[in-house]
Length: 550
Image 1 (cartoon, one colour):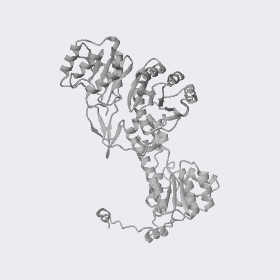
Image 2 (cartoon, helix red, strand yellow):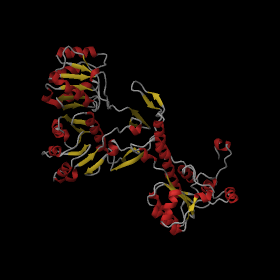
Image 3 (cartoon, one colour):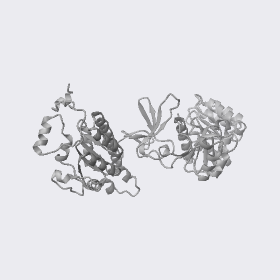
Image 4 (cartoon, helix red, strand yellow):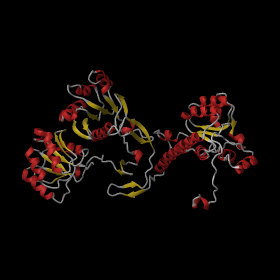
């Protein structure tokens, strides 16, 4: 039964194809990527297939001994406008779109002397790789917006009941094998058509993004509060980068996907050695790398279950790593480590101390001496995984948005990666923090933004010594952080990712000997919390910016 929309346009129903197998006697070939064209030419020649082609493709096929009918001879019209118009002609498109089970279609072909094409082999101008070059100019990009290619692909894909469409050199062998078996099957043509529409959809998406930037328009926007505008529509084209053994648990299938063309962040990771990464490894790697990159000076972080159990900054990565690993050695066993500088031999030697073992080491780069040292030690060897994560903004491909899945949808927000502005901070207590604690307060408030809320961290100078994360009450997080810190809490500073709703935490903080507090403020009970800090003689700073991380 026709839908009302179909009927209103007078479109007649199309009968199912009368045959499953379509012999391949005549094909159109026009490929920008000449990979495998020698193999293709040899196969088509051996099968006695007639070939029509254009320009450079025709020359390449002829160079491999294949007789080629030039498209200009078929259309009776030369290539014009520097090759912008070659195949856009009824003698080409009618030959592709004619339905083999429609006598009226075949009559039209006969009337105009048009021959059918049984297959179209086309790939598109390399627009994406060209615009990725730093020196690419808009005129160069525009010339590589393919017009005829996508039209040929879509025409053959639409008429897949009677024509096959090949869009990638990887498909040549299977296509040639089908010719040898007597032709393509309907199932094969359907699959090729699906891949073809994916190919053109991706191509158009890349062009649309580039054109929006070129026009200075960007995506359509809607207002989204104080942080600015968000896209009203977000087009994502992603591919599978890593197939994982399983997800968070062995019974869950899993993989890592990334937007096509994105090679920053974890999408661009390069594993130097070790067994394959797991789903949980990647979650921890994300937390580790993002936290390490928040720190300007050489830094190392130790992550367990997406939360830091150690973090430190120093003049050298090795010193920072030694301090970070010592913060909570029990939790650090089997952890993920990330540094924000080259991982050198001195850093590798830190991890060779007795009783230490980490699952993954992440860095922007590795010194070869460090790789050799760890991969030749009996206790490490194939167990250690070293991962290079390239620097750069990984959010460009998602319109600057951090995405997170929920059931049936995606949540999107601007990443919480912008450094805090110390000029907006203010001391709210009678007592001002000592100058010696200034750097520690900034370091602690940097770390706390990457802890799971409710989050509390305790830092002794430039090292994390205790953290309380993921609790349902802030006072419980305070208690856990101070217990983790132990004696190291005396003279340390404490940071909170959000305001203290009650003054009860101040009493615990005073008992532990904390020297200063930094928190966003913003509670209706701020005056009570400030009064408690004053009574305890503890200086407190309000930052006016919250850092929840759920």
